[in-house]
Amino acid sequence: MVRAQFCKKTGLKKGTWSPEEDKKLVDYINKYGIWNWSEMPKYAGLRRSGKSCRLRWMNHLKPGIKRGNLTRDEEETIIKMHEKLGKRWSAIAAALPGRTDNKIKNYWHTHLKKRQHKPEAQLQARVRPSIMNYLSWTSCLLAVLHHNFLRAFPHPHLSILFLG
DNA sequence: AAGGTAGGCAACCGCGGTCTA
DNA sequence: CTAGACCGCGGTTGCCTACCT
Image (cartoon, rainbow, N blue to C red):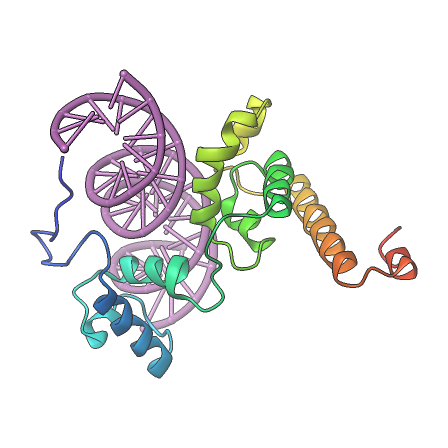
């Protein structure tokens, strides 16, 4: 099956983004900022949906997006957080600066899924955060911050600040 | 060299939450 | 309070490419 290049209803373009489209979107956002994803493509001269533009920006064009493979550390963080949070990719991505939820999701499905032994983790998908989920999320985030802080400032006395 | 296949990843889709008039 | 618009998230699809036969 071939993915349609244009939506018949709306006439909007679909599929892979060209370098020209990327440039138009980046130039527009650099100039005017993000104000309304639905309206922006029209003014930026793009025949794309707002959703498509947002996705492209968030996953590829936004400054600070890291390219290339995930490091060992990042991989471990994903595994740990997935154990705690399940498939809350955006929450996991928040702990990995420069990595997007889409990237992490893809990475999980292609590399890490095989290693998973706990099927109950899958049951957490789409579950709204309860108090316990929230507490476990914050404790996990603190653990990641702690880890990164100690790597940046490897002084024995500083670690005391984090130990309760 | 050519065709088949599987893995990796970009992008789309639909749903639910939030905001605003 | 309610309805519609917008946004963000997770699931899924399909293209591309490297590898195998």
